Length: 136
Length: 318
Image (tube, rainbow over all chains, first blue to last red; front, top):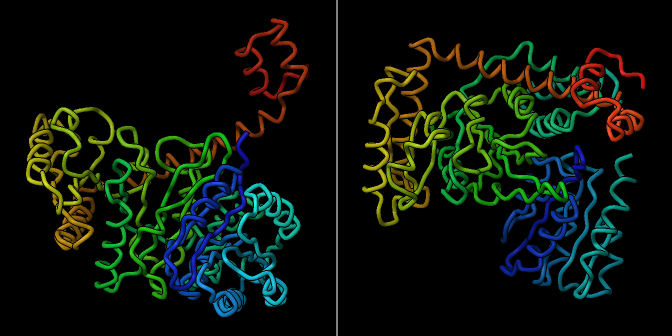
């Protein structure tokens, strides 16, 4: 039975790094788990990501970043989404991000960061657990 | 359920062209959320039909890139453009990868462009069942051109003719000779044929093949006085886009002057109402289908047709 309206998720790559294999693996895993996934492609500005999130009216935005600019770019996406009135969108992240940065990012609105070696299932489980709570 | 004041406010913001409101309203209608029917009513009345251009054609023929070029062309003429890009849902997981947005040349930051990806959600034929609702939201928001990009399933993608006024059928060089073009289906509903990727080898042959195929028996076509042009474009370089834009306008003028526009609009509305009925009726009737009905079928005490009749008649209290 196909769910009538699956959750919609935007996977985005802010900044300048061009490595998106990880992002594509996530896209595939989320699709197979029953989510509708939109992928922005590489080298997106926070403004482009926020606008895509608005127009696609997504439930969550997943940010992938390997370049080290996460402390600047992730919070910028968060604040732009808030500015557009999307305060109920779940924001999570992944990539090469030092564990020490997880908590500061969380305080800035990035709900969860997944590091290298995270199982795909744990990301799917996380979204399936958190999204229904956010929506209700 | 959101209250009526909220919905009315949302409808008002849509009519003002507020993009976040447009996005939210489309979610309402495509998800069939509580209140969505009130919203749809409010938006439909008081707005008017907009010229809708459909893009069909096999996967990888460059429909999304071409969509990006058409957006630029119409933006250059000062027109507001709304895009609905449909990609397939997985029949297994119900999930979908909506990849068109990635290819549509970036118009981010331009408030005159709105792009929304939609999943087919279990429907075959290249469109999503609630595409009409999404179209009406864009109409209400004041977009002056609407582009509908289909899944790209190929030969059987004819549903687009029930949603668009002008259908572009997009192919690439090397996709087949005139025999392919004679097959029933999508070739019959193309109003303009586009050989995209004209930067590749074989463009001239593809154009010639298509022209020849379209010429065979064309005098018997119901469109009569419109002979579908075959144009070569390169969405990559921009070659041929202006000629395509002009051909689209010529087709629109033809629809208006021949009275076909109104006929097509009625066809579209018939398809919309019939989809609505199918959805509502099957949902309400299926709700009456119980385990004991199924058990009776298993035991061959009744048959699916008889049971179906009873459920439709509101009986079937087994």
